[in-house]
Image: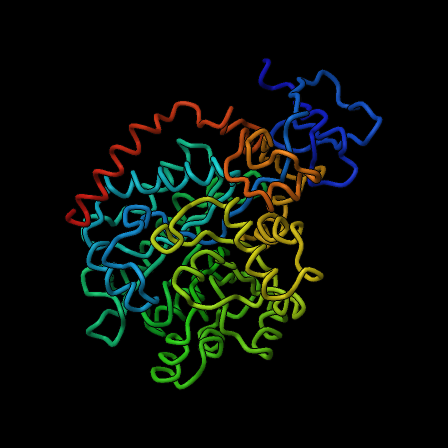
Length: 449
């Protein structure tokens, strides 16, 4: 069959890979050959895709998000607030989340990510009001419809306001319910191996919304079932103060006491670690999702990325929730991370290739998928192809630098596992105007507008 023949991504304008000046050959969902300058593919019977107008990147990988928050973007009640008051303003709105509105939110988030060149995304869903017990199942179905690779986390909150936590009673669950459903979604949806399209991780929300018992038991369950572990940590100074008052220690100490400081854990934000804590993270092989836009919107601070990397900590990128970013565009996140880290560390320490590396190979380490994030023989055929024919790119020199410096935001083609998920800047079969109409109506209804 025609679609089973190898595809030669031929003669790209630029490609983020060594020895692949004439492109790459894809077969059966894998990269099987890199074609060097002056060479022809040795793979027989290839179908040619002319990439001469495209800059080719490994598929971008989003390591932290909250899909449901696309329903509360730029919500007036939550504007101009820091994290804790921002959460207090939004929890009552999120408590109205229902299956239909979640499906729309998830579809919007994943579609926006795909169109930005993202081929793998995580999600941290931690709000389970009554009637939304099957939230992770809804997300899995949407991911399969769109053809995006996912690591979905079964998030949780069980420390409500009556227990000294931040969330209201209406959005938390009890510990036994959380752990039982965690086992259920892993058994039902988690795929293993290098071709996996759907994987599940466990993700208690934060030290201020989860009990110590749930943190500890969740870590033990991930060890037993061999899945990854995720939470927010060191995002704000308020969190530091909360942990000192509640647990008599700093957040990383608390995390270690709960059995989390290891190589299966990746953490969102990581802004307020000291030098000793960074070294401990590096030794433990615990990785960090840097969320540059969200950190700036909420004025939480700036993740010390270069210091982290010098301490041996792997860094990936995450767009974070679409109520704190307020977007799900990973290519824009690359530029934001580049700019904020360049401003912090200077031109000699942060370049455009560093930002691209964080969003690809660095993010692959966060999600535990070394076969992703790099255009190399044997790796998954996850690719993002960008045209540079917009006004913003006119007069560019280095195409890969132009993607970051000139502000690329939409891919022309996206391939996931050797299959085109975006063609000519559109997702096949997806009626975006209709999706916007229905999603907007759901957002207005949920917030009472």
